[in-house]
Length: 390
Image (cartoon, rainbow, N blue to C red):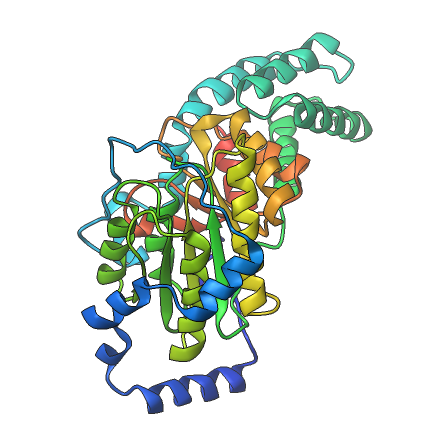
């Protein structure tokens, strides 16, 4: 059974949730009251005295602007339910298998050929061939060595001589490697989710998709003030999913945006605040240091926050995605990974490498541009889609 949105969010106790909801409804019976006016948005663009003081104390320096991208991601004009999207495409598992088409045609095809000749667990040439296949699918040398070593040992202990038995064993081991605490913690009020990642990974679009499934009232913060049209892109998503967006002009300090957004979320009773950030190049030390300061500003405004720090990783980037995850984890202590662009060109093995070498769970995956193409990660489902029969 695939993991569903229903049990994806870790919440407060049920009675408390009911009381919170009743209080919110009593304070704001008209949903339109939650949407900021043009005057309010303009006022938020000006630095508050508190924000100025915090930033002066932190001595936040404006990082160098990242290069503008000619291709600006567009939010979908239609926000459909996950069920509607699923019915259009023949089911989530089918879309996942299609999304991993490149892996399945190359990896599974080669594994099929190798498994067809499997007869003996002592066949070193066979295990070397399996290693080559896995490394070529972005699993990586370290993770491949661990996976193949475990497979060889268990196949020997269980006296496996059938290729199909070995395939099932591979799926089992991949599932165990991928398993982790995938639920998003939304038990705080407000819950602050910091979204990080390099340019082009689909971070801002993922925020727009995710807010459609979040429980309670969501608020967005346009902390990516450096990429061309990033603010406008998030504002369009906010309009589509009826979530107010805290924003300033392009080039403003992202730490100040985060500061004001946390204050607004507390003041306006938001349940969840998602903060977008500029696409940090993980090789740029000054940009990563500035991101660390953004996190400190958030924690100062709300002790214990951010409650989730999610990194979007483009699944087509292979081992570079693993390097990104390692660097971001060192700087901002990631709580989860979101794999994007599993749309037919990704090899998929990077999921195993990230889970094994970093220990940060994959919480969400995206196989397309529609809202329904974002889904909670399911280790068993992914392992079967990656290594199952063609």
